[in-house]
Image (cartoon, rainbow, N blue to C red; front, side, top):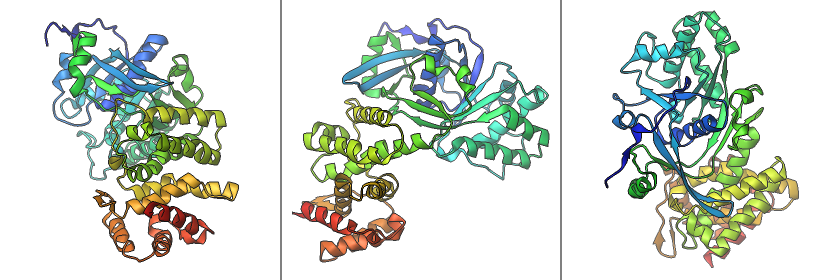
Length: 467
């Protein structure tokens, strides 16, 4: 491919660094950085991002070569139409690595314009390392690096409470902000930092719990030439993301005046309590995914896209969400139905091939967390059982036999779970199989045979599958 312009030559407005970002990965570049680009376009945010490299011992050459510019290609299905568009992100102003330049890293704390810290260092990143005893050396883990940075800021500005910081961890763990703050406090104790620093943390730094959601497949290796023809630039940092994005931030009302996403149309919500949104995601998005797998797979379907193209299965999924899951949730009905419509659009995304067998990993524990609570809540509220979800439960038991119509099913789960089902399926009758499965408290956290008529309903659908 020839005659492509250098993306490094794109005019770039010089903006103060307002955001430090821990992590160079695809997700943050296709999620948070894409949002900040939009904030710079549509609001008075006027800030750039400096990225802290969490892994590796050298700065990726592509960042420097491209002057930290790259494209986000947004592709998917939304509101009844195909979305295929792109945005050039120019809001990243630099990348550095504490392992190479620890002094430079600490000096970043002295920037009076700094307001936000964003991170995505994997779920294993928010932990405390008691062996990291010397703060003069580069801490091994992200919370240690953050504690050292914040202490440098506290020291340099002599405890000035006007140098506020908002920390927005995007790691996919519950109460991520609270856990990150706890780690910072433990490092402070380990390193014998003064009590005044802890008081400054409490009064000056806001650690927000967050919930993020967007599929960012990453670099479009198979389509990069097509994309570069569209943009006219060679781009080795390009990322693909689905149209849907959601960021819930459990933070103070005052944050809205600084992080002005309401002016942009971005699906960002600054809220008092994340729990309803977390429950909505787990029950509707994750629950529908998990319930879909055995039902669709046992009928010869192998991807989410194929499931949505099949009239019977797509109706099953839609009815499950609207008629069985939503009635068990307490957010406003209009809000839940809007979210459900977005979920179904995401399932229909023609640009993402999502294998059902991949989603089936650890399906038993997923079903316990994502689907079983809906079944139980539906029964409490109505006195009935949700037929579609009971059908999924029966199909899950059948799925874990490990074969169907002579075809091997490559199950992936804990060895104890697989061994249990292998033994269960040696029993002679469906009644025995269902009773034994429902009685396993290790799988479900309770003996489900104690719920009247549940065994009968599950057994009914299991017999249908066998016939």
